[in-house]
Image 1 (tube, one colour):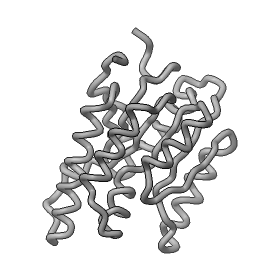
Image 2 (cartoon, rainbow, N blue to C red; image 1 turned 60 degrees about the vertical axis):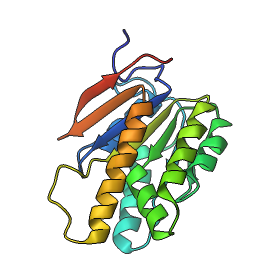
Image 3 (cartoon, helix red, strand yellow; image 1 turned 45 degrees about the vertical axis):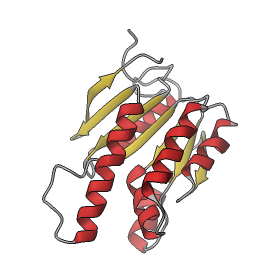
Image 4 (cartoon, rainbow, N blue to C red; image 1 turned 30 degrees about the vertical axis):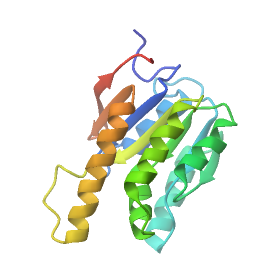
Length: 187
């Protein structure tokens, strides 16, 4: 079996963990093939974040600076299935960062989250390039105080389970260390 994180990537990888666990950095290295210090391969970055305030704008700039050159960026806060279709034309690994912000955007827009998740799962059936998803694991902390917070946490858990079920590889990040939870060969 290949070493975890080397090319070629499996069709679908999910990297999840808590805040500041190293998810994005690890996923970027997976997508570009640089986990073990290799020369980076070009990749496509689908950004779901929107710079709604100064703090988020700063985070987005930090992510862009860390990635550097070699990335094609597609910014799409809502239509993730369409963004994946556009990314497939580049014939390069795709990193989606992140499902948590995408879910937040969907809920804020009043979209049907289950329908959007169904569309996302269907879009993976025809996707030719490997896809690496980043998502937060929200179920390990305190129960949110508000109904909206609980609804968001529950919806994130359901979405993570759907993506993890579909994924060939699932990696949980803690303190910058990857724990491979699932590693199934491509069908």
